[in-house]
Image 1: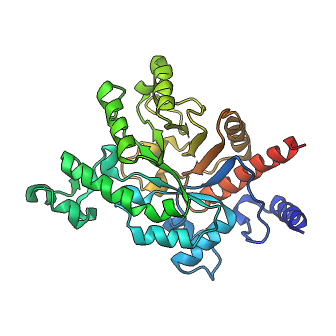
Image 2 (image 1 turned 135 degrees about the vertical axis):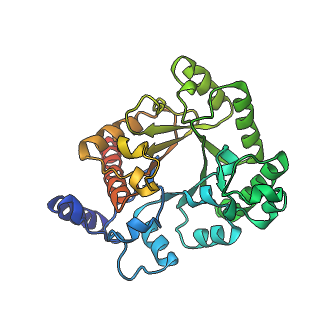
Image 3 (image 1 turned 120 degrees about the horizontal axis):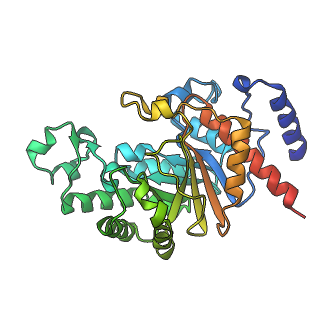
Length: 330
């Protein structure tokens, strides 16, 4: 019965133009291991207007449940802008199937970015001098502030850990986080503060690769840290890490190829990643994902979260990987 439903869904999907996809929870094929495919948000405002969710999915619970009928993983990026809280994590765990996994993007201060001062919780604000709290952005935490942020961040994820629904913790470091010994030591510090969790490391400076690439790969592999493989616009300032697995879990992020918006400072997050992959590009991406030898699981995340671009491309990628796995099965 399920196979017939999937076949009907695929036939209907092929007959529809790209901007008229119909989303139905009853006709979605399940992703075969080792691939978990999803998007970098399920609540982006442009997605809510794009027709992915049915009219009946009006609240946060209904939307997450609907999303989880289509995908078995999601990357939570809101935790970059503000520290998460345990209540939300508990609700996420309750509203998703047992096989669902949440990967969590590390809070800005944990990856040496600046944070919105207004978003800092009171226990953190108490440790910051008043003049610094008057600024719109805060980006130079003392060891005490940093430790408090790590404690609150880690503690908030406890419900996901207990439910076995915590995927990777994404540490996306900024372009000024260059390859040097002190930054390797900071990565070790992050690993120690998040002991027991699986970390995925995304570098945004090319110094980690090139002639130094093998040292970087050995550094991550020796600490069981996953290198984040990127598909991003082609530009000299955007690093191009290899598609390789440094642990038994791989992590891949598809950012799109919107080069102009990537460097446009006034662009919103949605505009920056406004890019719809073609089927040919997705087939090429699927081929790269399948080459991640040594990985037991590969998280494949689409960060082109403009409208329904991410969910559309994630659905196609999921189909490509499933079909290849099914063909390869005896």
